[in-house]
Length: 403
Image 1 (cartoon, one colour):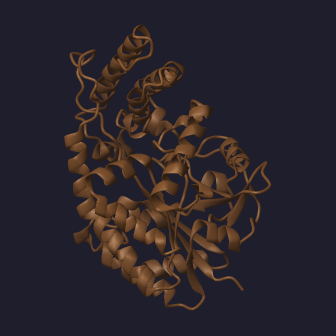
Image 2 (spheres, rainbow, N blue to C red; image 1 turned 90 degrees about the horizontal axis):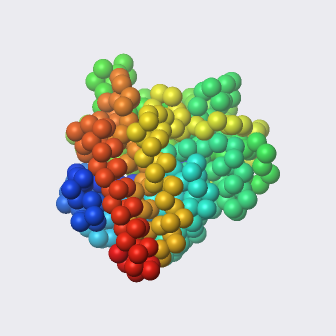
Image 3 (tube, helix red, strand yellow; image 1 turned 60 degrees about the vertical axis):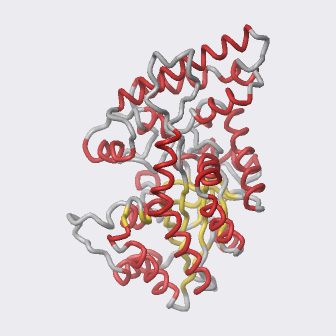
């Protein structure tokens, strides 16, 4: 008899933020990224989130033989941690070496390439797999697309590529009467399993935990344990998917988030029928109960759960069109630095900062943005695009030499 299990999946990412790049910088300064700000942000979040949470996860692994989790760690995060906080990478490596922490595959640059260039998308997936193998010494067999952006075509691609599992948002209009607390099979596939985020229970921690206007504030481990238990009744798994930075950055230490989570894990594992699964572990343990179809793209962002957080206005659409239109010309140069810059500029955060949504979602966008307005984010990005084109032109005229 299989145990009821929590599938805890945490997403680890830091972007390279584009600096306040003016039109006067174009054709003269090809340094697009604000290294000072990026380093400051990284070191701040390392202190508030990565170091204390990795220490807590290590403690939970040491204390509870049944504790397991899964992580996705982007290429830009690995690069920045290697440069500015090597101890953070070392602590992640130690977690993975336990054999109970699985790394999930994704695009290296946390990009939306699947929707714009299949060849670039596949290249970034392979690049990420290679990086994970190089840094952590493990293989990846389950896939998550950037921002859990998922549709039926992606599932078919992932199966053909050789992945055995894929993650997505358990969105009510798709699920209808069904529960997210099961393993499913994507429609039109034979060998790949689909795990769907239980967004209500995930967001109770990720978004509502410190909200004093929330009816259930303050949330304690006993209450949350009861909710997860009730949700799991009659089902196999509860998929708790959230940003890693939930712990310590989005929910600060003084909210009690770390103690809460440690107590919750202890309570959950205190019951003999309860356990934790990695994403692969859940796929091994449970067969798909039925098929799920998502013909339209679903993500884990904003109230609409679609791509509009990145593609909802004409600025975002224009920026995305410009960056992917350059693909063939950029790659043809074989200019390592130019190609690296172009890939960093594909990171989805760049387009998220250009979002002009109002109300609660807009507040979330503003919280994450390093710019005074979405229009500034667009303007700086457009200036960078102009400079990329200038470099391409120079490259062409120097016969492919680094220009």
